[in-house]
Length: 308
Image 1 (spheres, rainbow, N blue to C red):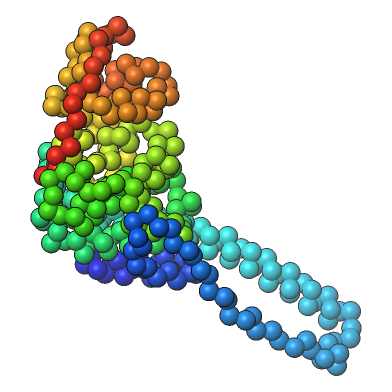
Image 2 (image 1 turned 180 degrees about the vertical axis):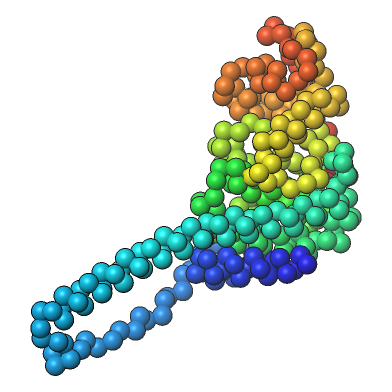
């Protein structure tokens, strides 16, 4: 069934965009790939009609003009209709897309966020199929809502992180991989992206600090990997839930009214949590304890061992 979904998505996206994109081989880790564009086929032209073929009376000319106008209006109407249908098809295909990732997460991630990388290894082809469709949907991403884009990039980050681990498995920590967040292994449009690109150049610029509890770096001190895919329809509930779960996990944060010992995530990305007030203001939205503005603050050590 998943393969049918994938075939459907490939056909749908190709037909909507009018562009056929091939899956390209992975380049060197840091080498940018030069993109070449195929020269379009020569446009066929037709010879103009001879003078004898053109009717020489004003009535006929007026009728032709009116018909041309009607035809033009019809084409414009069809174009608008096609554009609406395109957006609907994209949204529909994105739903199928996240269903594929959702099934993999439910199969290989426990409710407490433990990841079976051995299980994922057996499903690596399915994960790569999902990533392939992700990259094929990318050219149409601008047509989607902010919520769709957030869900897309959160799922992209998490699926690519799993792929990175599987490429190097077995291992004890993501830090056993050389420059794990800087490896350009995945092509989106005409660019080879790495995990840092997605986190810092895309997700953090969307002004949603809760993304830090949704994207997972495959480590024990990271937030728990949610065992379901993020979707636009459920995004607000999902982001609120993962934030509350992370803050209530005493292995990652210890919170009381007058003393808070926080994950280093709040130190590394301090600016992101102060867009609409102080860090304490942000925390108080998602904790059961009301933290004092004068609370003593410190940070916990970060455990980079694999989250399996």
